[in-house]
Image 1 (cartoon, one colour):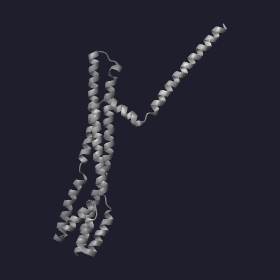
Image 2 (image 1 turned 90 degrees about the vertical axis):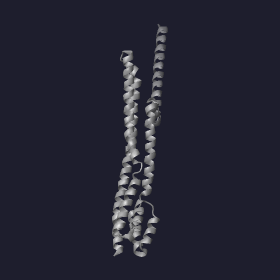
Image 3 (image 1 turned 180 degrees about the horizontal axis):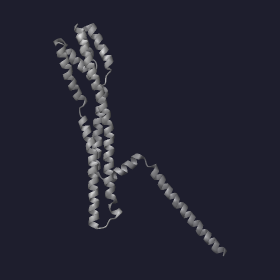
Image 4 (image 1 turned 45 degrees about the horizontal axis):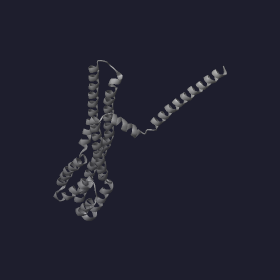
Length: 244
């Protein structure tokens, strides 16, 4: 009886040890999954989505970010302290005339200074000519501010559409497998459905990221354009006062 009891105890300890080891392995695997960074998970899901549509979506993201970064840098460089510029131009007009004011504009970067220079350059032909020059060159500067922004909006529209197309194709492939086998099995179509959903997710993520940049760029352009319009009116007023 003692031998049997010892054997049972030994077996119980073996079972408990095996269960503990299994639990430890499960915990280690869970800890390993938890330690995976966001970038690693994103990379794995991107690879699982397939190279066909995911590569195109990634290309849209890269090109869109390139356009957005270029526009942000250009717009930040185009932003100037228009209040300070108007004071400098006004002082130059009072002390040295139109040529002194033009020199101030030549030494200042940004669309506002360029518009001021064009208006001052036509000041000798009268206020009407100066105003027309300001309006015309303001349109030119606005076009430069909005350059390539339409490409960014195109990438925002294309990315989710490509994702949806990948979803539709993945679902078609899943139903084709069901029709060929004649049996609905989750394991049979799980891969195709996963690919279909991943393309949609990455397409939407790309569109959301680019949309944030797009809204910032549009807001920045509107701010600069409003500043240009207000400064143009101030320039005409300064020229009118200088002529008197």
